[in-house]
Length: 212
Image 1: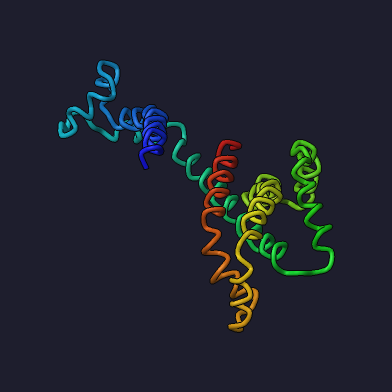
Image 2: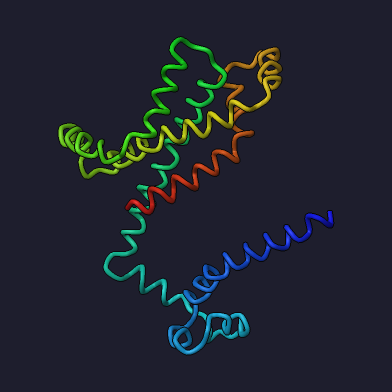
């Protein structure tokens, strides 16, 4: 316990220093514009109950200026489905690759892994031509499908590595109890895979958001 104390203190200090700039930015975003230019953001915390320190005018100006509110909404409309769709498909696929034997499973998984090394730029022109012919160019559905295709290989690979390490006894017990493959996935695999799903959800969300 005592040996790990310095490590824990170091981790806490690093996390605090890492979070400090973001916290300062957040505090400054709700402070009075005149006070931002005159005092540091920490002054707001020292006078936290002073109503003159705080305002939502900054957010109102940003969201109302040049259609920023609509742009933010469009970004959410693109990013959320582009995160949920590949995770949903990848979770089912990773479970099938890990625990459901079928012909060609190894070859198909190898193809999925091989797609990780294909540069995304190679697919842009073919996708553009395909979308132009299918009337998907400039639509939300087209963007969702593109980001789903780009994110699926990595999602399947990461979730497969997690799901394949789950204890076999869980699946044998579920099979003895009469659970189907779908019930096993919903009631056992999915709850246990929340850490992996959450990790990739954060990665995919940031990737899509920064790509807009």
